[in-house]
Amino acid sequence: MKKILSLALAAALAVTALSGCGKKAEEPQSDNTLVIGGIGPLTGAAATYGNAVKNGATLAVEEINAAGGVNGMMLKLAFEDDEHDAEKSVNAYNTLKDNGMKILMGTVTSVPCVAVADKTKEDNMFQLTPSGSSVECITNDNAFRVCFSDPNQGIASAQYIGANALASKVAVIYNSSDVYSQGIYEKFAQEAAKQNIQIVAAEAFTKDSATDFTVQIQKIKESGAELVFLPIYYQEAALILTQAEKAGLDVVFFGCDGLDGLIDQLGDNAALADGVMLLTPFAADAEDEKTVAFVKAYKDKFGKDTPNQFAADGYDAIYIIKAALEDAGISDASISISDLCDALKTSMTKITVNGVTGQMQWSADGEPTKEPKAMVIENGSYKAK
Image: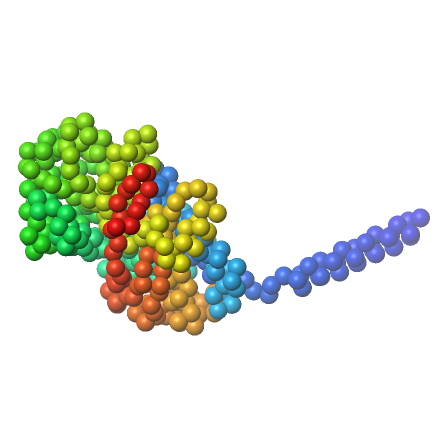
């Protein structure tokens, strides 16, 4: 009996060993997966931006992998929450690097992006920010962006207001403690003079005084402004609209990409956003084939929410990386971070990408060239002008 049991045990072990060999043979010999890191606010006050970018990028990665990947490589998106905090963003970068990141798609907001840009420069890691708009985000030669820079948004806004004769007297409410808001305002003011636009009131606030705007609103009422330019984020804009309505301030409100999220922020008072205009390179209701397909795919995957510009920026960012990888002929995910960066920097100045945020090309300074689009909010949705 002992002999029989021993033979049975030996046979079982042999089968197990052979079975293990069989499984081993079915596994890929090498993992040719390129890890793209993402950093942005998934929680906190700016979470609308970070989650939109993550969703758009996730959708793009899944589409690319389903179509066979890039030059034989699969893509993997690893995304970390930074809560729109510079220190947490640096920590997130270090975590992603430890987990095999070779390219950074981030960060989403400007202040964290500037902090992380110092780290990517030290590592010579290729960085493409979808929505970090301050000038300082891409001062290093390894960094590029998808969105407009703050100066470009300010210039384009003044030009649009002037070209369409929206107003000759304009007031501005801006956050003097925020690089995004300050940067847009400064260029807007310079360009407004060229467009024969008079800035009749320029009212500043800071992070510590971003709840009560009654003084600024009263000064604007007295200034005779026909339009109020808001180069700020949607949280403060929602408060301003609410307080302006109570004060009886009846003007046109005009902003930039920071106003994405305004409708949701207003909640039951979303009607206050009707008539608000914003300059952005993406309009979800555009009827071109690429936008229609993107919006449908986004809604199918993430529910009824309509993608905003940040989702489109994240989506385009992944396809931009794909185009640069293809141009550079990168097919081995084991390439070093530095060698990959050097190859992609060269390719970025050669490629043209037709994205949902427009047709884009890049100069060596990392800035994109594309056309802005104006939208107006009507009945709780964005409409292209």
